Image (tube, rainbow over all chains, first blue to last red; front, side):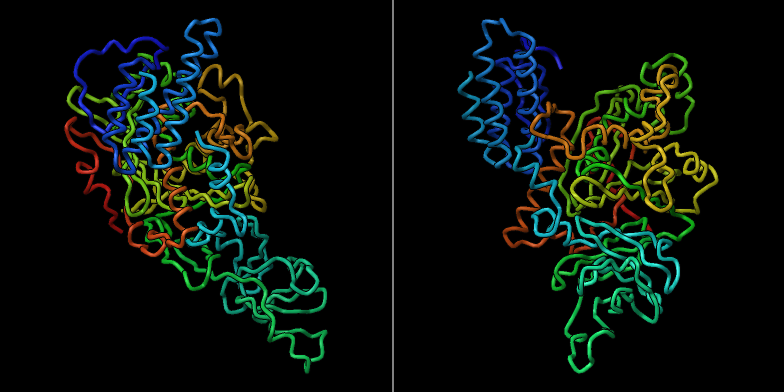
Length: 107
Length: 428
């Protein structure tokens, strides 16, 4: 996975909940993509993919917090790290809409 | 990652636990028939899901699985005499048949009539597909035997091994369905480094796995829920217009099949919790079309792939944590990733290194862990459904197990479950 940073993609992204979103960073673009997919997710398989994506966001933000202890973004990334875990647990409880609302706080 | 509560819910299988109650709704492999080879042979200890049991073959050839300890004074029946259709405790002579009924109580006056009032714990058994299976759940919910293809082939088309693993069952299942580790844990150094010489060598190989596995170390995962559990589709890039798919089944509660390529043997596993910290690993190799070939037998004898040599009494692998799995650091430096011989030992070593029960609250998962996430969520759902009174569908529909794994090339626009529909049908 790429480090934190910018996804760089600006093209329109089709929402396809049957496929896993490529989580390379925790940019706004990535968060919007995951949120859109959360809102479209209804089946067992969809929720598994969303959980994997949220796991990935939690992992990458965790790497940032370990590797960038002096960063000015540390507090903000720390809140996103906690938010990703909250959203992850909501998806595990089959509440993807509630998970999307949690992630929207970070846009 | 899982919460502490979810991890406990999944990993605890003793009597009375939710996962233990779930596993006990299925027929489970218990022992090899050759462990009780003949009528009236000595009993053997069998520990399953935290219960200490004994297996014995009675005079009529029936296999009984009963509580190891005599209900009188809790002496072990392992020392008992297996004769005349029952197992007799040598302490005071109480005797039990394969149903657990006390058929003789010689130290008590007959007029007291104690004997016919007493039963010890006993579980029904079936001999099926080269194994002795046991059902440890409520009698009124007795399930179907699973219609697994490997259980239906002739004896000479199948080989089964049993080994003892010093971990909880769940991390063993996770190893079985996590396709992405095979590019690393099981790789030769040439394959890992994708050397020119190795690429040239595999170009000439007849198998899809040899040709395409090394070219893409970051496969994409797709999962689909099925009647039997999950099918996991792992996609690697092949030629420009095609993907190489490897399809693994996870069949409830704990069976898997390794992706199959026609013309070769198929391999699979079943993991049965022995207790929360140890597991019985059942490994099956079978050829649906013919007797196992000499080449396939050589792979088994040489422990190259999924089987490992074990102690004949304890079933502990000869390569184990006490001897560091016979790790060869020079081999690790020059030949393969681990320095350990054989896929089975490599899996066991890495899974045992994670501790007896993995602390899943401390994981750092990514999208390559999709199959593992799916299996956990499915098992949690099944376990919770049972606690709410819903019996597992799969346990009572043995036909749904009649499937095969597959590996194939598909055009990039083709969904794997459509493209592999015919290949995933069992035939025997």
